[in-house]
Image 1 (cartoon, one colour):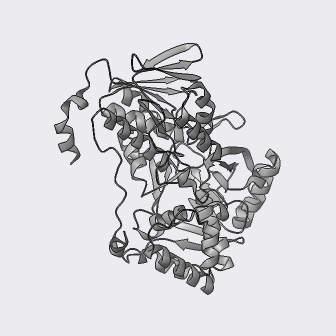
Image 2 (cartoon, helix red, strand yellow):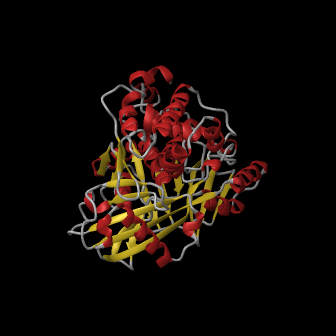
Image 3 (cartoon, helix red, strand yellow):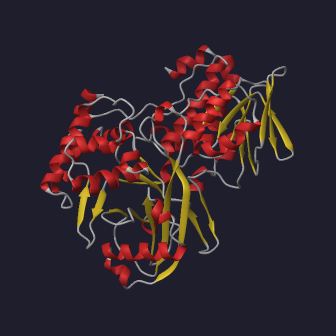
Length: 481
């Protein structure tokens, strides 16, 4: 169908003139997605990034204290992240993802429970593992299955209800809440359960645990995150585009006579017909006063003021020996939530030791700790799960606090999130905070970039489909779409 649409509008596809220029501001996942999609559509794209590397909050950088390139935080994708995977295919890095369908839940003391798909059709593929899980009591299992059954049968709930209120009303045991909902779901959405809109919790459950085994497969980058986007410059250049680093945009002005945007970058002015602002919401709020003002601008400002951040902390530890054979694990009943054993699936990490990253989600208390206090506490807690930590030597360590890691998804958030259409002519919005139907994830950012590109194409008479279709449910879940 896409090919048929393109044949009907060859002029929109060719775009051989010097016109049809687009300026994309922001080199995170949203900006990269928008830029690549618009370059594919025949636009002459210029991607502007303030920093010397791409990826935004899903980036890596050289850490001088350790002499290592580290990610600002471990980012995970799933089989249901169809638009992010589409971007990775464009950039030729799809094979740099390590996939695993197993999720190991560990209790202090080392007891393990493994959640993995069986050969049963969806949504029953995960049932045997839940029934075998030692970390849940019989009452916990019954309450979990009851809740998942209700979410399977329910349509998207009305906005305004929190996950916590729904759990309290649906007989969820303390163990189920603490060891599944609070850890697996709330930490995935990086917020406390009373600050999560039920609709987003239900989406996570359906995508990761019910729709299909493929949808819930977990992927992690085999390379530092910024390496995934290293091919962006070449991708754009082969399609008449450019990537410019070190471009801090301070203002944007619209000229009604020429129908062009002028972008101020600390002394330099760049021009383009179309503008895509792919910025974090706090950066968008900072730029807003330096853009054309109108009533709709004030409305957007009001929406931005209502959005809020949640932090994520990560502790990086290099041990002189291997502390576990696991590639990753969910850690129960402690402040540290996830362990990623990166030296096992990143080929660039050589040696006999272990490089692990510990992720602490949705906790402002841990984020307030000092560097050494946070590292010591995380290391002590890690030893409760892996005894080898007690005899291993920490060769080096790092603490990364991403204070603005994700935007919150509290009840009613969808009434605040704007869509891709901005208050200004020939200008479009992208970013994980824009309305995508997804929470703050790399997939949400990729979707926003593609949605902005679609909106821009439609504005010039090119109704092409850019957004990738969501992964279709399988088995019996086909009946509950």
